Image 1 (cartoon, one colour):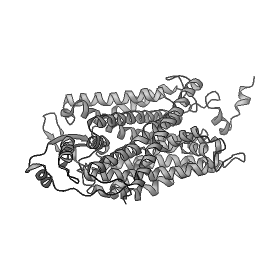
Image 2: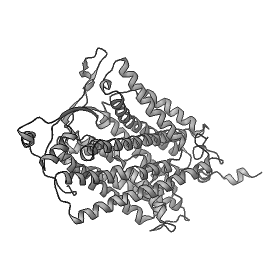
Image 3: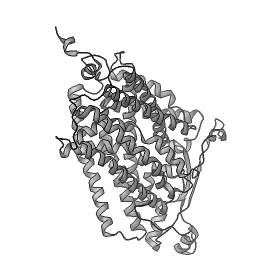
Image 4: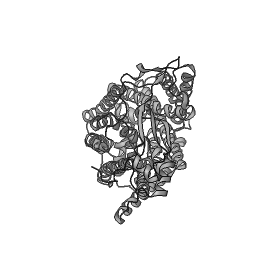
Length: 525
């Protein structure tokens, strides 16, 4: 299924060593990596410097480097390995592509889907539909590139590893920083949604938004102390069912209420301009933001070259769901479709239930992604105690999870606008992680193994990189402007921000109106 071109398989390590000069030893390193869902992996591999030296000095075009991977066992208080904690955790390089495809299905429908009806309102029927499909196809295309790079460097476990092997440690550090920013801001977005959905479930309890986020923090904190996610399959299933049920409730509510005669929709939005177009694309990019974890998923596979087949499972589920949510919301609400899908419902039991389901979904999503980031931080600050279940190891884990939660709390309150924060993440970071970096790593890999890049390939690569860079710059400017405008309209960071979460005319006039309450009469003297 590869559309990115195929790199030839490598020669054996012995042959490469012989070509280096009489079978001399290559430099081997043992590293720990955070794998899928924060699983701790130990990887024995050839160093990137050794690979670069051999390619540069001896012209070895195609190679496979030392790569031995295993799950790292946790150590108990006595310092001995506790094998019991490995129960239910499959070893790496064990899963079939069908299993990985099923995991991807459970993860593809998340926070980003809630913005899509608004993106249709901004773009119109044709542009929104086209770009949801196009960005999915670009994701498939660049994912094939990631597979081809891993064929040459099979010890790659993360996007940062790919940067290390192709461009060096500085590039790897840069990618790690961007991934950390992506994870921190995405977790902030998740905490924002947990607070918002919790407040919406209890909309008659009039607490300010920062209070609801604080309550969310207190709920998340003890759960985040779990260091192993043994039942990840069950978590993924619950995650998918809860968000699909929440979305289904909103769609059912829209169908029951019917379409207002005055609703307008357009094939191409009447007021669509270049800046609005780029801003809308950023939110669509966010919905495909999971690509940064694809190398971790490949590390779980028996044969990672089969990874492209996972899209034959994920794609037929992901794209139709995105199109259904976007088109249904736009059909029933038109240009007034909300940037938070649940805001298309009036106050009532359906809104409460949908909000509760979304809150549950976001709690699971935060637990999974927060565990990944906490594991990465623990590996960075204390690699020798990352699998220590003694007192010091627990305290270090407490520190890492506390840092993750506090940063998420600050992000959620600093930018308490779901649509704008989601779009900012999607525009600022996702084009690089999903498109620009995979293409650059692929180009560099082909150059390292002396494979010529054809003229038409250069045209495609340059166009996609330029497109990604343009979306990044323009959408980031527009999203930052929207956030600043939001602060001016609704209040500064950590203000009350009761809009759309209190059942009052002052805070939620639009929802109160289509709930059946006449705010103009209520406000009359």
